[in-house]
Image 1: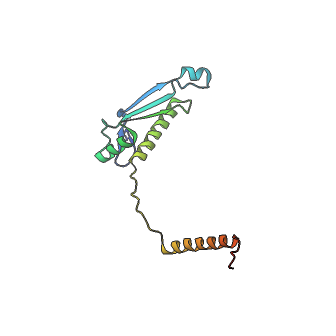
Image 2: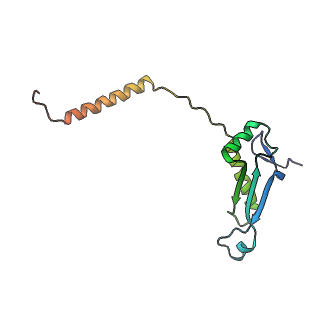
Image 3: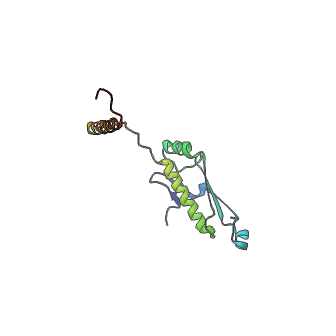
Amino acid sequence: MGDDRLVVTDAVRIPRFELNESFTASGGPGGQHANKAATRVELTFDVTTSSAFRRVTDRTRVVERLGEIVRVVVDDERSQLRNRTLAEQRLVEKLQGALRVQRTRRPTKPTRGSQRRRLAGKARRSELKQQRRRPRHDE
């Protein structure tokens, strides 16, 4: 059939047996269903022992940004299955965010036109403020 791995990026695919799921009662309103059904999902993923990362840089980037163990807790829905899929989606989003490479900022200089406009505005403002002053004795 298909590949039984959670796709994060083209290079990172997590085998599902590396994901640890635990289920507990979610609490909150819901009456007897909330008290009896274990619908809250806690999904943990150990980055250091995972075989999902081909490149060492990907693994170190995730560990630096998220830590060695990534944990996601979901109790939004009444259904355990829906909470499981939400937990997997949130794990993928977290890992994608951690794997994203930040572009380096290149410092830029203001353009000549922007410098002229800035100085012209300052000169206009100075002229306006000078007109508000009392006239001097020699004028």
